[in-house]
Length: 479
RNA sequence: GCCGGUGUAGCUCAGUUGGUUAGAGCGCCUGACUGUGGAUCAGGAGGUCCCCGGUUCGAGUCCGGGCACCGGUACCA
Image 1 (cartoon, rainbow, N blue to C red):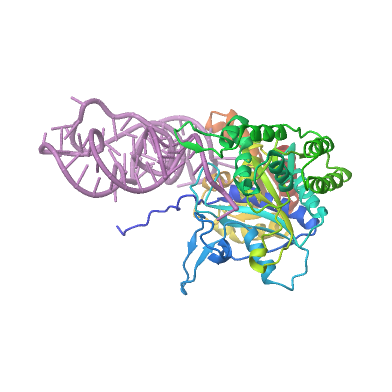
Image 2 (image 1 turned 180 degrees about the vertical axis):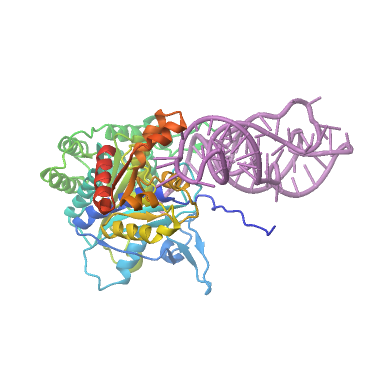
């Protein structure tokens, strides 16, 4: 026995077999269509980047970054990208002649060397769209409008895009008397609101607590009076954008800079109103924070109301300083990112994508070696008519195994053609779904054989037309 | 990172106070049924009992260490 290698994948990595790939491709194509309609252009960048590009020049400043490092023959310091935003910033800085605004979309895998978790992998796909070099609030507006249009195109059922802004949160800090240096810590805790609830957030903002596993959660040591103000802020309802803005104006009446920020948010909200994105779809919800430190303006995220357990499936915001690390110059940008894997899980959960495994709609079986020219001819006849067709290329002789093969791959139709059919100038077409349904009711094999459910014989010349008709009928039945 | 749990066939798992040649269901393959998927029946293939060490006449079983995975929790640019 030769020594064999155990087939396996490293932790957090997985294969996507055809059913998952077909569902994913449909989803990505649907999203892409929306963003090309909006006039965003595609971009591809290498999976591997220089480590200093990924980390920023002051390496070590953000320690504990879960970057996969990569070796090349030149021994350069390289790593796999962990998002698509940093490579975008690099591209914008590197291609100085690129006309701006640069509005691009990119769908590609990214890698993070984190501990894998349910629904979290070390290799996963993001679908990002960003407008770089834009200050106008219309850019923020179109990102959020695009989020809505995308979710509608994916038929996810009711959803809610919620947005707020770093400016509002900064006003909150001023309002509560918290120094701006603490902003990252405070926002990180506020971001957990959906997940852990207000009571734990309060504890984490003040004294900290010991969680269920006995792990201590350190508190931020804020005063109770400060947290009271935060809570008062968080209670501002998110049902009506105009009303929320009114309340914010009242709450922040004495806070410097708040009025300007609220005016910006109002312009976005008004654009959205005038385009028909009403409060049911887009809400101004000051309880969302988003953990990322680099956001500087509006932040937004989307949840599916029929699948809330999947959390935010689509999120983003404005980040006006990210390109600075490469150019030293401030370039405003706004964008959003879709967690393709998470959204796909939600779509599967909602039954929006099927479990299709095969691209072929017809399997042409081969029963008689003497008739191979006929099988080949039929196959290409179907293909040239635009019907995805597979010719059985395995070694099984009889139709039993070949039908089993069609069944295993979920091919909806099978063609049976032997000397019987040839003599009479006909071809047998079998509807696999009809047969499968009938089989459930039949216990006796002989009946099953005699009945040949879902089969029909048609003249050889009607092959393409009949296949087309049967597929159309199946398509309707399947809906 | 921390707490707890679990590692036995492709999958889900059983395996007695430590005792001969380690089992079941599902799946897979073959046949009954040489032109029909499902069901049924018969047969077959498939094992480093996670790894290393220890105790013992004897270890899947007990002990020590390691690793992996699962659940919870934290972190997540």
